[in-house]
Image (cartoon, rainbow, N blue to C red; front, side):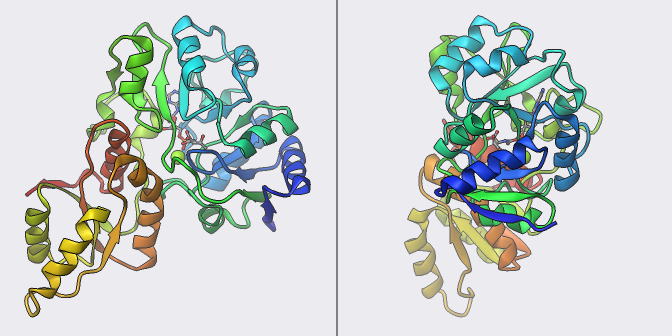
Length: 348
Ligand code: TXA
Ligand code: MG
């Protein structure tokens, strides 16, 4: 199959993308979080193509994207008050809620679960496309299963060229990390995946504590029950072996000297010290290969997945990563790095 490169700024391209989706084809589309691989959520054959193109395990359910809360209502059995408050506060935006699935929504969308994940994307192109297509769109991240999520159209093409009908290019994604996934199928809201909306933001709107699934910051035992099937898969992982390092910059650099990695992933503010440290230690320290990923969680979220892909392009095998804060949006960045590093963490 030849994958069409469509330009989101061109109205003809946008309308072609909508037609392809209505015809049961797959299109990689921009959202404010990451690019999604969209298909008509009400067409089981179209949804099956998503699993095939991504190499996605059959038991990993998908998020359904809708234009607004009104299009969400008929897809679920109930839309509780808690969900309503959150939707009013954060939709359109990077929040996914899980609610009991309505009977007419095909099983395959939720991989057989009785629940359904729903989100209203904020990206104007995603909104325009949903309007033009007039159907709800099932869309996981548009990467090959297991690799870092795509924040550029070129990332989606790299992973899926020849396997999908089209990619709709709208430039880089503003948030850069996926939506927050919140399970609202029981009394106590449960955070399954930290993302673009922080736990603190959710708690402020609901005026109560949110339970956080242990899988967010811990590796699951092989036989542990999973509230969210996606958590049991290795995710976001480059080919390189990443180690997440907690501690001061000085201790990090001393550890790097000892470990001799192929490269470092550090904060912007670290760069001057990293360069300086290397120059002052000629003979004992090779010039350091260094990538940076921002200073604050917002910048880090936006840059992280592109950096993980660059690490592989550079052919680095062993990489040390400065650990971000776990506060606010930082929890989502930390969660992705934990998975990318297969939970390899050290404190120095
Ligand atoms: O920002 C995002 O959420 C992006 C964009 C494209 O919207 N989508 C995305 O989808 O990240 P995906 O498939 O890569 O991640 C969805 C996560 C998976 O971990 C999946 O297991 C979980 O949500 N999930 C989906 N439906 C679920 C359900 N019914 N119950 C529990 N977990 C669910
Ligand atoms: Mg994904």
